[in-house]
Length: 248
Image (cartoon, rainbow, N blue to C red; front, side, top):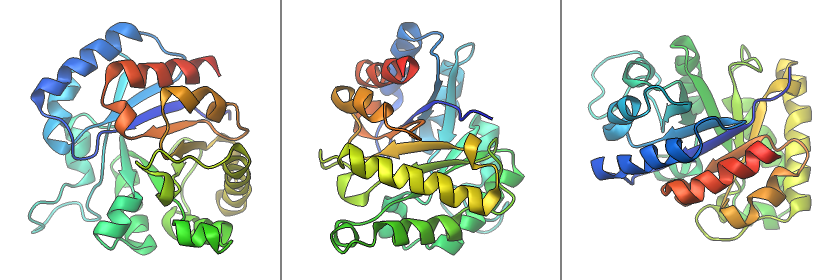
């Protein structure tokens, strides 16, 4: 199975109803991209974006989900709720969730299992801090995160993994091409040992991806797309990244 090319945009805590105009612009400019085009808006916009995307090739995802199917969890959102609002993917274990909310590998694993149970494809995020990179423990850190966060029952069709070096997110800094290549090759091998179908798992790179560096990043072996932050908020910027991936 050949990995799906995926350009995924994470809007994080950005966007009001007026921002849906960017969806219309994106769909108009890229009606039939040669890759999966995915946006993960804040939960308040998911259902509205689903309506705005009707009839297009744009796919939608959530930014997090609770590990339980339902219950007394004020302010949380279940995987089933995301699916009901139009999502087919969900971002899990993003470094901002791990840092700001103390999410552990075990919790990310539980959420990934909940997502799978509802038919959502989890985008499991992993990545090292600057201190870990400088200490030379990058591969040990991401290997441990991968082992602890990815369900054993995952398959190439039901899993996406995103490598996001924490020190590169929103900073404008990007790892060298050699560093990205090393990590993605490591992930492919580690996933093969874990689930046996890693050849088809989409591996995304995230961390200050922008139109100016997208083509170079997408030329790296085992990079099947990107998880894009700030550059996904504007149709022109994200569209350029979609075009670069489609041409890769």
